[in-house]
Every structure is written in C-alpha cells, then in structure tokens.
Image (cartoon, rainbow, N blue to C red):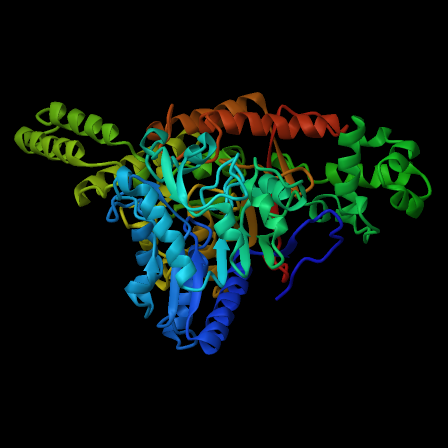
Length: 624
C-alpha cells in the first residue's frame, strides 16, 4: 500500500501517512488481524483496547467483512473500551456500549463476557470502585496487546482532556468545552452533551504493548501536528504517546496536511520542483514575505529556505512569472465556463449545492447548460421538531381554505406534538415525522434553486437508503445506494459532474456520498465526465489546491447568500453546524468567497469581489 515518504526530522513519533481514508482502514485491519492471530496462537487470547467515534467505524466494518470471510476469529478476543459518557444508560443512542455492539460485536463471534466497557450507569457512590475494578480487569487479562486510539480536537486520547497527568488511571473526568462542542451534533445540541465521562487514564493507555492512533480529515490536521511535532505537554494528552516505544500515528493525507514534511517539505530537504510544488512554495513565500508574487526578490528566496529553487532559475523573475501565470490561468469567468453541456450536480444534503456552488450554478444556467441537481439524502435529521410543528400548525389552520379535512390536519399536528414531548434528544422520530422533515428540506431545496434562476424541474431527490436510519449514525454505502446513483448517471450522460469534496462534515455523509458517486462513475460505460469537486460548508480549497477559480460579483455573491436563506430550517441555528464555527452557513460562505478573492489580490492577481474555488479532475480520455 502506498505511503507518503519524506523527511521526518521534526516528527517525534512514528507516523504513517497514506493517500486516502480507505487505505487507513486496510492498514489498521491488517494490523489488528495480525495481533489477534499472533497473540491467540502464543497465549490463547488477544486483548484489544478499542475506541469509538466516527474514525474507527471503517476499521470495524472491515474487520466484520474479514470475519464473515473466515479470515479473523474473535472467539478468543478480550476487549476493553477507552471510555463512556457519564451518566449514560447502555441502551441510549449515544451510549458507547450500544455503539460497539451495533458497529462490531453483534457481527463477530466474540464472547459477550469478554467485552469490557466502562459503565455509564454506575452510581456516583460506586464510581471509584468501578474504575479500580476496570484497572484490575485489564491487569488480570494480562494487559492490552493492541490499543486503538482516536484524537480529539483538544488533543485528548480517550477522554484525557488538557491537563491530564501522565500517571492518570481510569477515572471520572470533566469534559473540555471543545470536546463538548465537537460532540454537539451527535446530541442535537451542546446543551445535551454530558459534562462528564469515565475514561482510561494516560498511564493505562501507555501500558499497552502496541498503540495505534488514527486520524482522518483536515479538521484534525492542526492537533495532529501538535501531537506529532510538538513538545510533550499535559495540555495535549496525545503528546504523551511520544514516550511509548511501539506507538504509531496513522493519518490520511488531509489529517497530515500541517505536518512539515507535507505542508512545507522544502524547509527540511531538497524536493523535486514540479510545477505544483513550485507554485505551493512561491505562494508560501509570498505570504511569509507579505509581498505580491511578482515583487519577490532573490533575498526573499534565500532567507526562506528556497535558495535551491532560485538556483534552478538563476533569478526570481522567471519563477515569479511562471507562478503568477499558472495562478492567473485558473481564473475562469462565465465566458470561459462550459456552454451547452450536460451537467449533473450531486448535493449530499439539500443545501450543499447553493452553499458551495451557488455562484457557478447560476453561471452554468446562463450558459445554456442542461443541469440536473441530485439531492442524495433527505437531510431530515437536521430539521428541528419545532419546524415540523410550525408547518403542521399552518396546515391545520389553512386546512379548510385548501379543501382539506380540518380534523385530520389537527390530529396530525397533535400526534407529532405528543411524540416530541416524549422524545429525548437523539431518539428516532415517528416514520410520518421523518417524512415531514424530508418534505421540508425538499421544498427548501426547490426554493433555493429557483432563487438562483434554476427551475424546480431539474431537481432529483434520491433519498439514498444508507441515510434512512432516523439516527445520526448511518449505514455503510451499499449496492442499492450505488445503483441509484448509477441509474441517474446513465440517464443524464453528463459531461460535467459536481461532487462535494468537503469531507469534514460532522458525520461523514459527504464522504459516503462521494464514495457512492465514485463507485457509480467507475462502472459507467459512457465517456468519462469531468469531475468538479466543490467545498464551502466546512472548508474551502486553497488557491494552490484549486485549479479553477470562478469570480463572483457583489450581486452574484448576494444572490448566492439569498439562495442559502431559502433553507429556513438551517437558518439562525442549524442542528449540525459542524466544527467550532458559530457562524451561520451563509456567513461562512460569504467570508470564504471574499477571502479567496482577497488572497488572490494580495498575491498580485487580478482583483475580484469574491471567488468560488474548485478542483477539476479531467477525464484521461478527453472525451467529455
């Protein structure tokens, strides 16, 4: 499996970087399988320390697949989980006990008596003894052979928050504000997130004979750099792993994005000066020097580790000019955008299209392209209960006017209202309520399309099955999901396909939707379309990552924002805002589009009011 090599002088712990999240899944599943087979052969059992959260789910699914194929046996595996929220009943949707059984234990031949998970339901009076008993159970099992870890944005491993001691053991902890914000989407609001948790301590974790920390996504890049390249400090518990003789950090490329060997490798060693590497280095230099690209001097290059690049060209002029031209050529106004093509837009949720590409959508429509917008999931879990009540109240009040049965409308309202009163955060809605929430999102999507001048007839609501759980947690992408996407591609024969490349959404829906599109395109027998990856809700492509920059005027950006406003259920306070950005989606989008243009301006490129950025993967055949 390919791994990203490079200079590692600044890395204080062994770190493996692979191109894609799926590569990590295979690596970790390989390692866990090897440990199980080796330890059960040697001593009759293997002891695993397991983690929860979104990151390990892919690993667990791969282990299930291997178990079903007969290549891994869990009958002599003993497990200890890192942590559990407190208080937390074992049958609640957010219980880590429930998570582990739903995502692994129910699907393999493990003895339930060999499963150990901190008890979130134990009384406070018994907590100290419960934690001590957990430690004893680990010792009696012979210690943990392999410990799987994730990393939180606060740098926690388990729930060892900033300030945790390297000598700490299993105990009750108070959750950091950052951790609770990060979990808010799971609990339908930060106020519903427990303030405490039971966790293995740092010392307990470090006693494992082998440790693997796994991180994926750009949103983990900053804390990963601190964990891997920073000094050991209690404020980032993951740095204590540097003391372990057999610990490895496994990263996908986005999570490794701020490591020096990935971000600025030229400061560590000689690099191959490809056009893309040169562009990255020159833009970095311009930012460091605070100058436009065409004003960079030989002294700027020599003072910032770029003398080898300067030596290749002799003087700054050719490097500056080539980089400036390369960036300028990425800018494509409406006249340089596709005309008369078949365009298929995949929107994971019903608002991602206008949030991320509302500007180019309007331009493509103006250029007489045939556009289809496919909303891949219903997005219904992101609708507040009070929005459903408001819509049902409207129908009940207007029933007679609309020729409906007022009594039936009132009964529907009352049934929903009673279900909301009885529902705890995270509980699954009644099937009828799930459908109503779906219809709310669909009507908003149509209104947003019309706001950017696109008729409602272009909308397709795929309602992919993987999303239809009624819960935050989703099923894996399956054949039925891919088949639905594939049929639409066959129907539309697209020349251009737009796909969300914004992969740090709170629960991985964007990543899963992209996987469905990738699989469907792989089996498509027609001419391969250009694939345009967009972002916007959580990140934006940088100028060096993007290869198409689409300028927006002040009026065009305002029209885009007004389209986002049509998604009223996501306005003011969205149920799943993601990250730690308190701004509304329209505010984030406005700021990012303005900053992309401002950054180009600072580099000396033509000045525009705002810009959208895209990564375009052109087909190798060139037939689209």
